Length: 244
Figure (cartoon, rainbow, N blue to C red):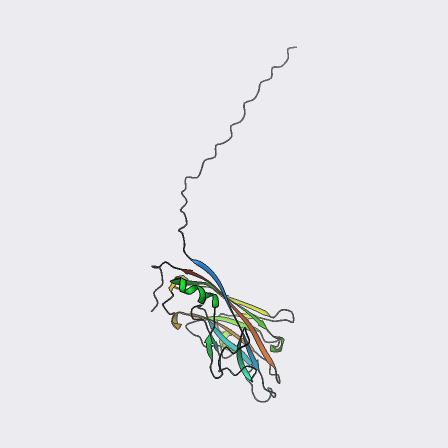
């Protein structure tokens, strides 16, 4: 019997990979500088020795202007001296932020002040609040947040927040850090603004914080607040939004 003849099979041809004919558009170069800036303050409400009898102000309510160039903290009433009976505000170094008898003052962002003179325009990417609540404030009353445009007036009571879009944070013994944020949504809010052009209150957004406090003799409720703003600064011109 004759031996079978072995025939080598031809190798299968691999398909040739073709490059995509779609041309990718290169991203335009940007001269922008992303900047993450923070500011810290403490808001305290010290009640009287007979808080349950004299109708003390049993709330902490304030608003924050979402603009690093002109970020302002506003209380629902006039501030008192540090460690006095009523609402007072302290800086990170322990000095008074809002003067006695006044209801508002600017929040300082040292890094923004350092870099702003080097650029012509800026835009806000996001604003974030971290509020650490003391146990003295009580765990029964939720910490409430909301955002408003063109209105810096802090909430006078819980009803003004419940009737609008808001966020509630319920605290426990081990969980007392409330977080809240705001991001621009309209094209006007997302666009660049000139450093030399002041943003009017009608175009500004305000984050509002509110918490009721249980009346307690000599009780001191304190909010430790960190405001973090993500902003972009750039030197070119021509795309800044025009504000009236």
